[in-house]
Length: 462
Image (cartoon, rainbow, N blue to C red; front, side):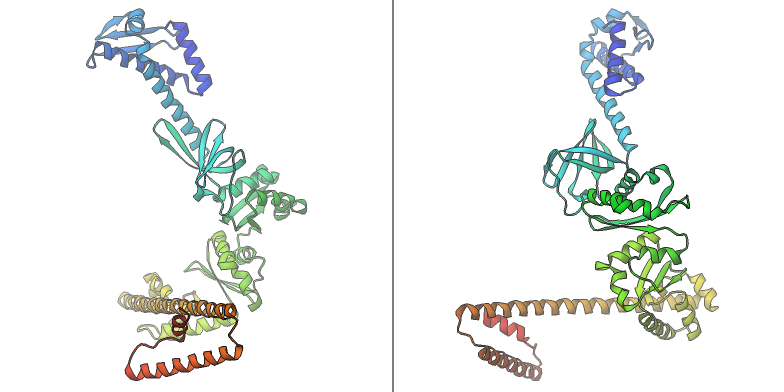
């Protein structure tokens, strides 16, 4: 290995692997030192240096100079080959790791190489990445040779390789698609101020414009909706609401709850909660399917949002004032003040800042502590009652479901046999009801569990 060959190898590795030349020089030096120690002994003091300009190799063994032939020839460059390869691989891994760590949150495009077990292996320009099932949009599937766009979610070293995890469910993907499809955002004329997403279902994006002549919402939608349509298609049909940003929460929250019409917004500063009043016919629209609309609006605005009608608010106020007034240490005037600040339940009262309650009611620290303890006990009691009510409701639902199944099976059996008449069915049902009533009365007299009519029907069917 002469000087020119060293320089040629270093330059080739630098260009092919995108590794800094200094790293390659150090790898070769370390490899030659490792090989020399195998020859002379691990305890020997060996130094090997390569001239960065000429490529000349010099070395010393316990302070005694080694000529070039001895350093490379006698020790053997071949012996150092594996060490050099290992160092180069490590350097390549580190360079790849640094490259993709800098791209976390950025969008990349790749081709699906394999799709097994719900996870996709995606070929990127210089490596492979994984798109796990958990990071895919619910309901979508991928196939081999499909081009896919995703954001870099996680990058970590795994031995001599780099493991790159992609994601299609993060909000960054929506933002990057907006930047790609809408030139005004890429140019900085329009800014995405906030975003909330439930992947595969719905997203809300709040935008504002630095140029009054540019309509931020219209620019994002595009002519006949062509811009937003491209984004929706990329997200497997996910619905996207574009919201006009406003620093005033009284304006932003109604915008975020669109398409529902809002009558009023009451801000409870101490709790970070907004009570939004809507008409009865707008209630379900404001809440959204399974609470999705209000949940996304809450994430977008950063405030906890409660949707209710004026009648519901009045009922809650009366109930809260009455409940707080019953606590020792709180009079009706203080209870009213608490409600005006948005405290509507014992849960709310149990987390109030003691200093705030002391200032609001002119109370002592001992009185405030006693009030908070009472509120915590009442909240725990209410939670226990709610849990019991939910348990009973689930049991009743199971009984009702079992009854419906039994009735359907009995009806199917009668229809299959072709011998049952409607009058007979009515008579049978009447008899069953009478038997159940008699059983109930007898059980009450004997202090025994009551057998439900549905259970009797189920046994008969069986």
